[in-house]
Image 1 (spheres, rainbow, N blue to C red):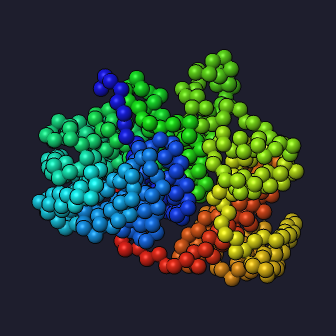
Image 2 (cartoon, rainbow, N blue to C red):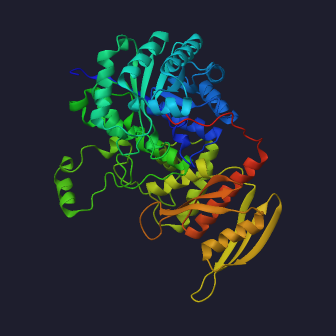
Length: 520
């Protein structure tokens, strides 16, 4: 590996990432993420699993018709029904890819598939052959490849390449591998499979032991040419290989890996924020590359070193991954153009109508706060883009009385259509619990709170509170997002945002899935 080579980035945020509990996205949100991934510079977007549900099929089809500069991929099991359905969704794509998979490990053969080795090979070949009759770009995944016997894995890989697979994926389905084991597996395939030069070796690592990025890099060192990953490391269980981490590792340590990608790294932080806002899954503060603390320095020794020479304690520049070097302060006298420019610099695309709404919210906030920081702008934009949907229920007013020794009392008025409804609730569980109960009483919806978080969008005592929560109704989970300088108001807004999602879902036709989703 003496020459620099190009590694293909296969993003599966919209398929494997969406399988994270609570991370489901609607069609509009998926298209927005797909467009952001195209701007980020990924090579392939795995848009979904078309056979899984009508919603997944529609999402893959819409993305296939929207994304033109890069490949759009649909997942399918190795059977005729799945593959036909995938092609039906993908056929309008400019660069379609069908991704077929079949488990190969002994434990999957015996307990899940109940098939012999010969039957596995035949089904894999038949699946790839059918997919290749529809399009030239076919990928085959040997599910649980890392726990598959080497001799059998070589046979499957050789047979599927011969059948027409242009990419062969080696998934660490359960996150079991170590970097040395992963490197040895890829090197073994390169040495033992006679037609391996006719396909790209791909790697798909899960993070159950926290080794997904390390295993992916080890695979690249030994010959893999494609990495399958997700924004923020989303995915089943502990997640997948983190796109932002593996990309910046290869770029920063090009002296070791001698390879790079087509990723515009300056869009990593905006894309991370977009996915976090849509899925409701916050990025931990100390997460590598995109966490809020990734380029923060508090220790005196570190600060002293940074003032003398940045590279003493920073191996990357914050600007290179999308953080702004300075936190631009806006105020109540700032105009729409300044706000639009700042939103663009932070990585957001706003329509005229969206900008107008954000600007109105910005002016209201500016009357409450002396200074408005980047974090405030991000919170306002995300609330507009991802937090607000069709408002069946709107907050008119609320009043909370909470005193030492007395149970909190809430008086709340919500509007549905032209009708305003007011309820008063007293609760021993605190003011937030009283607000929840008031919303339940007015809407008539029984709600169970599964997750609730409030964080500061910026610094200072007048910082905005950003509330995010997950509630359960009728066996389904719904996310909500709300922003306000009043944390209780932010919570009420987040709760109503989730309630309105329930209302939208109740109006929509039933979404009957045809099969369970797969975790490679």
